[in-house]
Length: 350
Image (cartoon, rainbow, N blue to C red; front, side, top):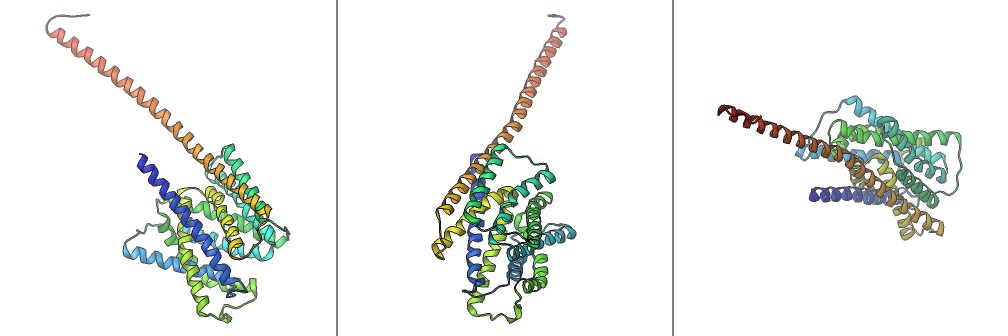
């Protein structure tokens, strides 16, 4: 039992480490690729289409080689999921374009309570006061170290709201589909990635032109830019796989809460590599966020133990009752057999 628990813990830690490392890596690579001081590839939606294209190809190769199996999921569910996921991507891009960085960060933070409410509505999930307190601490901590100026406009607010709802629903749906069809994270990703790739490659250049006013066809593709696009796509495969793994192993809420560890890593690397200013406010916010994440991890583990004990106690009680019933039956059976033997010899002990 101990070996199984430790093995599960190692898998959980591995999935989470892969997600954090690949997510932070892809942010750093994209920063260089898309920055005007870098290669100036300002086509975020199209780049996401490239990401899913490479992910889909990896999935096809894996299925063809027999490393993964392909389970049936109705096409309408895959298309519906792709629509929600692509709405999330486009919504985030529009939100970043129309809103200030401060309001964009607040909208990302608001996904945690939105996911909590959605899980409560859709799956009847309840949270302890310790979990709620931890979520609040994480939100405040990350807010302190990331939110600066906050300016809101009508169009930006609508895009941010659409992005929040679609992203939250997408993350909950990943876990739901895995449980519903008993399908692994990579198998699910290999089914959804081709649909997302095709749709984003078609719509991506149009969305990017609307956002930036630049045409993809006019971009000067240098060898350096090509290498960074390839690096970004490679990291995206690990990022996508680990996201599905994490949501399948944990929950959408846990993914959102602990996911802000990536925000803290990006801020720290920005300070180390890109000379981004690190103030006392940033440091205090990071410390508070980490404390919140530790409290959240402890609270979730405490909830699991409490749930397990509730299941274990009735089982023990039932086993004791079954044991008492068995003993009583055996005792009665022994008495009956003894009485039958006495009757055979014409003796009664009654």
